[in-house]
Length: 238
Ligand code: TMP
Ligand code: ASP
Image (cartoon, helix red, strand yellow):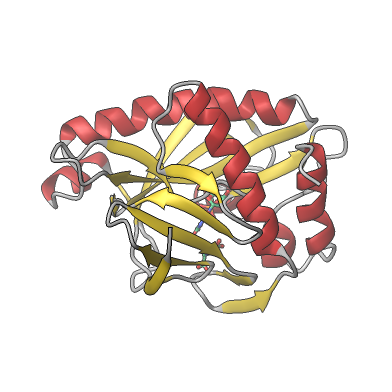
């Protein structure tokens, strides 16, 4: 398998073509941004950690029957994935109140939700990923009704699996963001895409509530690299 031209570069990752039109390489950078790119920095070896964590979690999710774009981890910063068309809707799943939910609705961070809450955001850097409703998704054609139904169903199954994985290593999965993609297989088959990492999850130590995720960077809490490494360690990947 040969690596070819760069197809796309985002804030934290880049996508490269391969000699197989169905496969691309996802490269994880150390670049970190927050607040829609307003705050910029780097987190040393973040790309290495996020590649390892994403590879492990996508592998476990595939094993419990969630279709994903993940094929295999290639090296420290790269993984082979199936090429997809990303659905322009970011899905946030919340188990505990934090972040924008706390702010928007005036709730206390840390409040346990009685059931997981699923939210949708439009994937648009220009607009700062605004919160959207199911009706917006339908009326603007960002995803079909069938796709939305599949996304919600998969998100709940993913949540059950991820909550259990993290609880098993003493971590509370507070909330996280998922992206889905359509395979170019003639059926637009939906698969889980993008990444699942301390960049895209809120992960709190169950005993101390210490934040072990990108909020340490967003909120200038210090100990950012150490937190990312702690997640690697808990998952037995270091
Ligand atoms: P929020 O509370 O800021 O809406 O974030 C909810 C979760 O989604 C949190 O775990 C961080 C993650 N997230 C991303 O992965 N990318 C983003 O652009 C944003 C805003 C949040
Ligand atoms: N990555 C996003 C950005 O830079 C937001 C975040 O993760 O806080 O806008």
